[in-house]
Length: 479
Ligand SMILES: *[C@@H]1O[C@H](CO)[C@@H](O)[C@H](O)[C@H]1NC(C)=O
Ligand SMILES: *[C@@H]1O[C@H](CO)[C@@H](O)[C@H](O)[C@H]1NC(C)=O
Ligand SMILES: *[C@@H]1O[C@H](CO)[C@@H](O)[C@H](O)[C@H]1NC(C)=O
Ligand SMILES: *[C@@H]1O[C@H](CO)[C@@H](O)[C@H](O)[C@H]1NC(C)=O
Ligand SMILES: *[C@@H]1O[C@H](CO)[C@@H](O)[C@H](O)[C@H]1NC(C)=O
Ligand SMILES: *[C@@H]1O[C@H](CO)[C@@H](O)[C@H](O)[C@H]1NC(C)=O
Image (tube, rainbow, N blue to C red; front, side):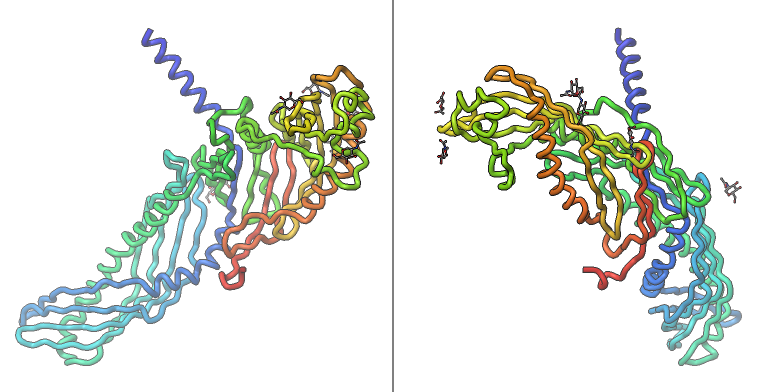
């Protein structure tokens, strides 16, 4: 018996793991994005390096025949340096290769010497040329679905070093200037890779703190951890992201699963993002299970120009029985989703099907609601989306609208003319307002200081693809 449970447990575990292997979202970063980031980041690297603390160097040099000379080099500051453009390339199946070439670096500081009873000091300038650093960083995924980084190899070499002393007695520093060259070289060699490692670890701990869920509103939450380790190819890094929405009240899987999709990397953009129909539909499912897909329509919400009011008298033209039973009373509609709305994404074609129920109430003089009848409504829309500037714009068109009576407290009646009027109302009064809003667009969420350049939106079979270049604007330029 126990064995059986173990098998059942194992099977269900395997099926939950394998059912989630297709992503709901994908992201892709190309070499062009890396190249651009390096250009922008070079200034930052310059600033970082400029403020780098250089440890003091001290030691003693054994000098024949006079014995040990104790020396200290302190307060070293970088006065100037030049970097070649760092070379950062994807390393297929591993991560990234980083090559940094510090062409030259000048530092200055103070020296201090003790020999027997003599103590002397002065300043010095140190010049290093051709410090070469080459690092391989492995990029993977940790158990929480975040990116993980590890330095898998690091090599450094220091080219030429030159030190000049000022002040003090030259015979003194000449005693140890020979050994100092080797000491500094060793010190640099000893420090460079651990410093790189430290930076990588710092960066990783920032990644560890990254959120992998996003609560859009009180009803739903988006989970976006990675579900597979990043796919690193020669010119790109691709991320498989869960991209699934859940109701915050109950973490329930929808009765459908993501289909695989492949981002078409065309036109060599910097960044690509894929949003699957699965992700959109999981959001619809989450909202539906949260029970928030409902709202009341009252007469005040009907446009003033409308000849049809939400009143029993007005509805009398479809249902003569209604004003007879409830003369001159206002009405209310409770619109509810019967099922989650369904989004279908086909090449250049998005359709949205909405399955609703309209519960019609009469508002009695004492303000209680008396149920009158309920209508089942199926409607579908065609949606066009585009990006323009930094905005997502669109338009929506009604493609079908069907209505039938699902229950009635006032006897049966024909719904054909009501269907016509409702369809007309939707087309004349509701959709133009929605389209106005869609046309003016919604700003695309942006990271501070990063503008999108030539963004492109494409509707593919099963997913939307968003591709863009980016431009970094200095913080002061933004609002
Ligand atoms: C990636 O680059 C390596 C070495 O440069 C090469 O051997 C390999 O064939 C390349 N792979 C692809 C898919 O281009
Ligand atoms: C209907 O009720 C409104 C007030 O609610 C009243 O002004 C109007 O005269 C009534 N019409 C009829 C035909 O009773
Ligand atoms: C959109 O897809 C639907 C369903 O396949 C199809 O009937 C319709 O003709 C398509 N519309 C366009 C504009 O491609
Ligand atoms: C409101 O009026 C209806 C009928 O006139 C009655 O059945 C109902 O009990 C009333 N409700 C309240 C809360 O007074
Ligand atoms: C649904 O409405 C469309 C027009 O919006 C119509 O062409 C179609 O025949 C209707 N379907 C049913 C099942 O009533
Ligand atoms: C709405 O669609 C369902 C299937 O989802 C169908 O059974 C029903 O007859 C449709 N109702 C109308 C009014 O078209």
